[in-house]
Amino acid sequence: MITFAGFVNRDQSRLIAYLLEENRIFRELQGKKRTRLTDDQRRRLAAKGKPLGRRLLDKVAGIVTPDTILRWHRKLVAQHHTYPAKNRVGRPGLMKSIRELIVRMAVENSGWGYLRIRGELKKVGHRVAKTTIATTLKNNGIAPSPDRPTSWKTFLKSHADVIAAADFFTVDVWTGEGW
Image (tube, rainbow, N blue to C red; front, side, top):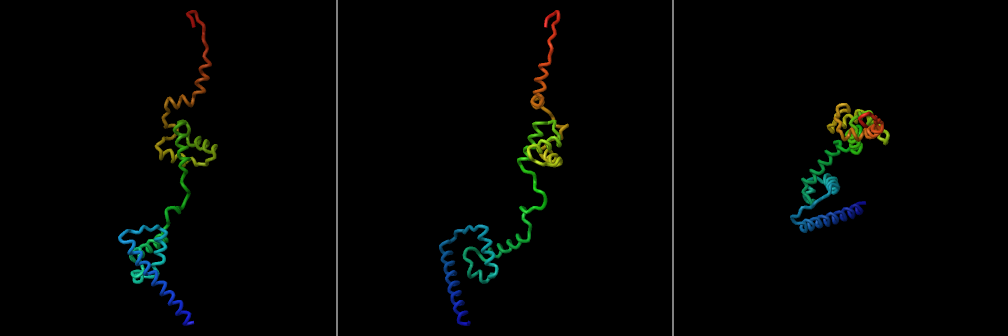
């Protein structure tokens, strides 16, 4: 058993010596150029370097300093114990396309209130609360329905069919002075 342990220990020592020499050569070739590492590479080096300790890292570390490796490890531990922003708690926000649709409906149809907009959205397959519509309009600076100004263009566009029909209901009267 002792002989087998000696074989393994000798092979590991040779392997470590080889890797140390390879690191020295890499450092010589690299010179003063800064090596750019990805986040994944930093994580891997930090995870493997921390158990070695600063003293052994001084001998082995070739790409970055031992202080850098230990700093990366501290960041890893800190990130592990904090909640990332992407895993928020609560209901997700309203999709941008639906917000734009709400604003467009309110601008093009100044007489539509929150409930009418909600009903129109429901027709196209979107279930949105009345308060969500109110908040979206408020965030975009659009007043509630009765307070929204109506331009002549909007008025004529929304009442074009009624105006056209009213023109056909005129009655010409013949008088003694002419038409």
